[in-house]
Image 1 (cartoon, rainbow, N blue to C red):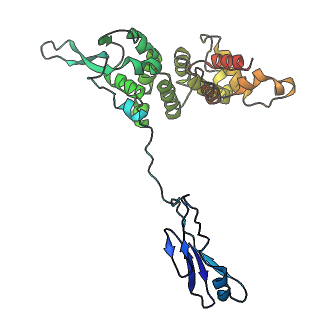
Image 2: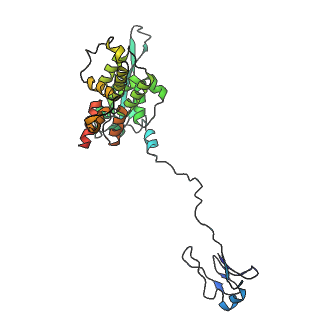
Image 3: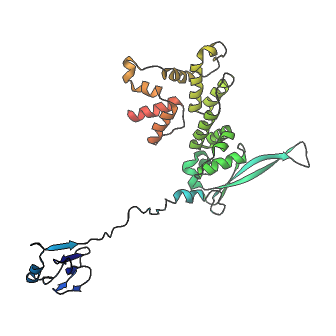
Length: 320
């Protein structure tokens, strides 16, 4: 809004929204939003000369912002994909796969010396299993199959299978569940290709279990059998830290020779890089922790479920 003020401070001409007639003429508003224009007769010069203030024409401009107040927090809905996928968990109506998970129940009433077998149904979808549980997907015969496929699972407890399938559909297991069932979850996920839950359960197992002289060999052999590089690293760190007391009490004769590289890597992490080693790319990878190797592989979209040696090989191939 534009106002011309007289010597007494009163408005003698006004230009605003709409057309306003005043004693000097008519104010016209441009059709272009935000641009105000006046007619040639808005205020004749001869009349404005009488309204000068100390020889100056005083024009007051009042502006009002039409922009949105940016301090107001606007609601923006999140992408519904995860919610929609998780909503399909155990959805019987849309499922095209049914897993019958066998379970040995308590002793039957008729035969007190026998256990009765029951099964729990779990409903799933091939499309969701395809990228999140590779082995389960392959069991289903692929997405080209028609109708509902029913499969029997005999080597996983129903509760563990439910945890695994829930994770496949985007669910998050609590630390309590992971801690209480870590090994069972690792075993199931290792067999059925739910890699990320396997690694999460492994991390929980390492965090909640202390390596000792009594359990280190069992943990080492278990880690080697399930490709648990993080658990293997924890055992190797324990061996290096307690090498003097271990040497005379533990035999390593029955361990696979492949574990020697993991032991050397644990020893190298505690030493400074000197000489030619300082610039050797291979030495850099060999000294890295498992978590760092997995992070680098994940950022490149590569497989993170493997031994230390396998992970380093993948990374070297990317550099070459």
